[in-house]
Image 1 (spheres, rainbow, N blue to C red):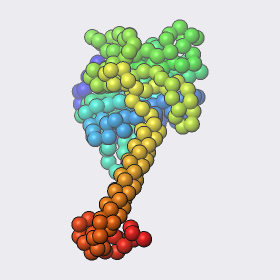
Image 2: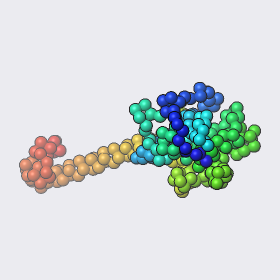
Image 3: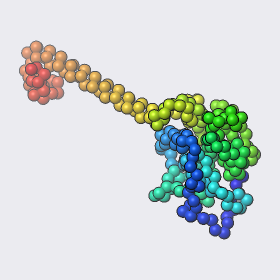
Image 4: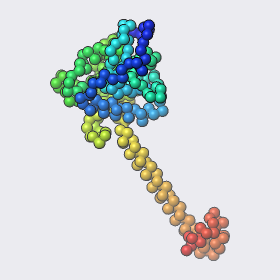
Length: 264
């Protein structure tokens, strides 16, 4: 577990490198956490107490020593401001975040193995990350693991969880599913509700809203046509009874011009 003991002088986020300049060798390492961020921005849009970082350095202390930055493919922190400053965060510096570690770290295994199951797991445990997720869609057989594994920190050690992966502290589940994102239909990671239902993709939410608006427009048009038809029938009937245009206008709460237009 991280020990938060003040040093004589800790660098600020402005002074620390914001990247290790190591390029990703798999575009999923950026797309998967960005999709999770997009969905979360919809379902938690009213909340301002969370931050999801993508390919961002995490700086922390362990045994009163500043450690090299950890750079997960994605991480979620709860209890921190969603926005930080005019320019946003350059990196995630624990001594600037009220010493709140991420609650979830995500690593996506690429062609080049980067010790996701050993060294990185130990470092996330030192940091105090409650949930550590390893997504290995392409090389899980090579690494003799499952395509998706979620670990929970229990007494300083990570314990492998069983599906479905529900995280009560986050009030979200996480898991795999087929969907279309950035015009690419494949398996992605999704957030799930407590009943095991995946939250929809942003594109699906936008389409649902478009369909709802179109249905409402059509309903309003049908209602207006029905009203106009009813008015026409009423005006025509009253006129056949011998009422004058002025009398019909008063009875139907219409202008004389509207009555005459209906009778034409």
